[in-house]
Image (tube, rainbow, N blue to C red; front, side, top):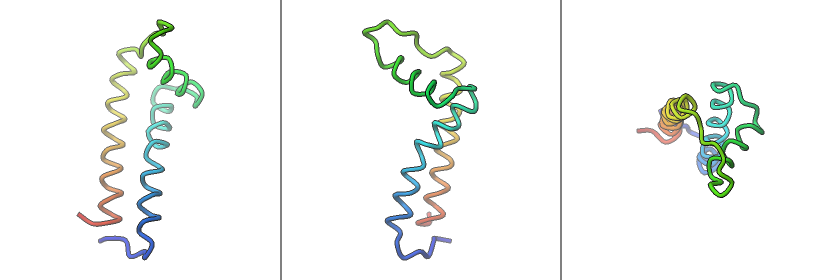
Length: 84
């Protein structure tokens, strides 16, 4: 059943704002990282000029698992808000 809140734009914005936070929190929890470590890993992977180490295979696997979890969460949140 869709949410009956008349300000659906605010609700939709909140869902999209929470999505990257949820991803970051789940990655930190699953990989036992602090928030600064998450951002450092993200920066290191993207900074090829410094020859930074890439994510380990286990971290890459966890990233895919967490991404799938976030996708399901996002889909469920949108269905609750706007219906199927």
